[in-house]
Image 1 (cartoon, rainbow, N blue to C red):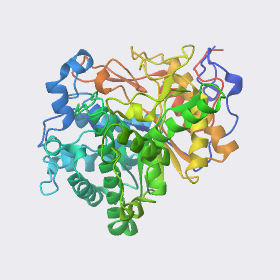
Image 2: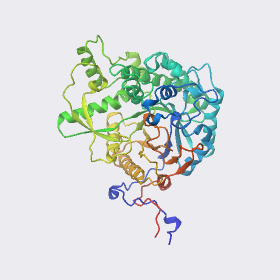
Image 3: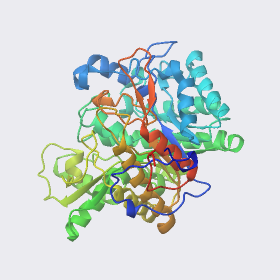
Image 4: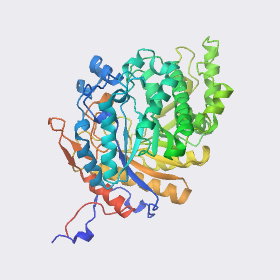
Length: 497
């Protein structure tokens, strides 16, 4: 017979290492959420006055770079289905929804002198619907979709974007700040700069491996700082919100205990995470970055370092410009010492100068960069606490990809359970100030150059249907049960007795 409803749990019979799951409970103040991003879910790419952004241009003119020539023109059609999406969030039982605002939907030209009323109203409607269902809106100001007119003046390589971004942020604070209390300036700046302006795999697709990533990062960091000060000086007292940046990194584990491998792993963390967070906390880039890029630049014949320099005024202006640190984490890599790369074509990778790889025995997701290594997130959280002044940390993305979007997504449940276990231990045993966890993603969506071939969603989306039908996967029940019980259960799938 069926078990009584009060005993229905969600059991994954083949969970690895279930005996090692944390027995701790999530604190009463800990909050759970789910996330998406505008270009990945909204669609309506040219409706109601929205302007063209760099991903519109990139996918329309460079469709061969995207699997199956896909694009986000319709995506999940969340622009028209936002009320349905809020009900998905309510079904999950989450405390908050992290979504991003399409700059081009609000400001079609990128500049604040032309506000698109229909676009502004869309986000007002979404926020109102969230609040009506007791779900807090957490807003990412920029998640990769720069207005195309701003790219045409150089994009994130142009210092003019510091002021332009700050005015865009001011517009959002004015429009939505009475209801939004958590703001994220940039999502994954390394992907913006390294993949967009370095190796060219993401929009705008520029290949400037030795200079582009550094110049882009310099402009982004100054843009973040200015937006932070705009909020502090003009909105903080009345609105009472918080603001931070979202930075992603693998955990980089030394391949051996040899001092050279340990140094290589630490250097990799500084080049990946410290590149953006070090200035926010301490005012400047990590020392190892400054020294290595300067030395290699000199040997390459540059008169000055390819890594731009902050002035003393900028260092003071940037230092401390965060209320929390957003942390996207999915996977772990191993790092070995690498002999110093030969001087030749300048590149960020040669500046870092380490050998990074994964253990082939680790379980993989559909994404070629995603390996299931739950202990890595715990080590990363402890490292952040130890090296960056014990900040408040919001896990802003964490999730698992598959290819088929199966509703029986036990591997996703296994992944989420094991990573949440490591986070719990980091909170209770290591005193890390993790206050929130965000599952990526609410639903299957457009995954950049992978198109629709990689599925991260808790909810399945039928992209063959014009209605973009959503269906709950098993992971929905799992996540809802964790949120409700505030603990992990070794038994997490509905069974009969």
